[in-house]
Amino acid sequence: MPTSSLQTTHLRDIIRYYDETRFDYQVAWLNEDNQAVHFGFYDRHHRTHGQALLNTNQIMAARGKVEPGQHVLDAGCGNGGSSLWLAAQKSVRATGITPVATQVATAEKQASERKLTHLCQFIEGDYCQVPLEDNSVDVIWACESLCHAADKAAFYQEAARLLKPGGRMVLAEYIRYQRPLPDAQEKLLLDWVNRWAIPDLDTTQEHRSHLEQARFENIQIEDFTRYAFISLKNLYLISRRWLWANYLLYPLGVRTRAQHNNIVGSVRQFQALRQGLWYYGLITAEKPFGSP
Image (tube, rainbow, N blue to C red; front, side, top):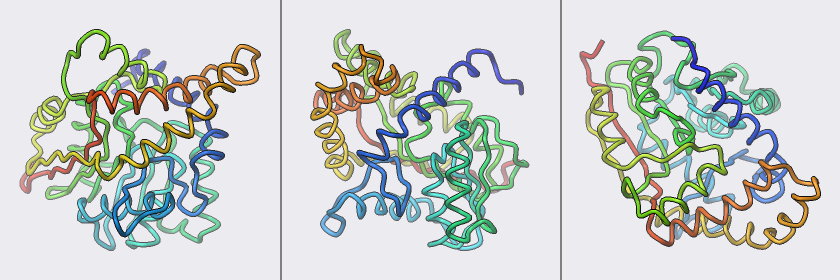
């Protein structure tokens, strides 16, 4: 299926956002060991930033029922952090896909340095149009990446094509509580997500409907905000500290529009969270046996 001009434009926005905010992530967030650009899950056993980031991987792997020898598609793999962790810790064959060429280069370099190239492959492309065969993947993993899709139903249809019968999907995803929200709240929510190259968020029912239409079963959509809350708040506090400098440097051309939007969006996400406009969800579903 050819990529539409609208989708091409959106992919360019995503590429620009991640290319231009690499410095922000490296300074404020990146843990060199796990290369994670996602939020961390805190609990009584995982109290530091690095521990929480790894805990996200551990919980998603458990909910995704990841087993050694499986083929896992890391949809929206970023710098390859989850793929590398899955290969090293779960002995799976991991294929990561991202439209961002610089992320692919980083992931491939990390795989080489960690001697995981025999288990990891990274593709520059669109996770709604993955160059893999039908029924070729055991688990589809998407950590805070489906949000970037303009058409989330298309992602679920592609996942159904790629998964083997009995295959499983696990996603960490930002989910809006309702559509529409009151005008002021809708504006706040979009003022966050649009600044992060996210066109919109779907509701719980919209996700469930997309999954059912793609014939997934055993659908579970859980609210994981309590685990991600500290991480979400930490990003807000970090961004608040730099907000004044951001507003000063952006008009001078020192920071780009994408960098400016990243800082402001990081503040807005927590403001929207505290107003109850969205929650951090964990989604699991299975492709039934007997499906084509």
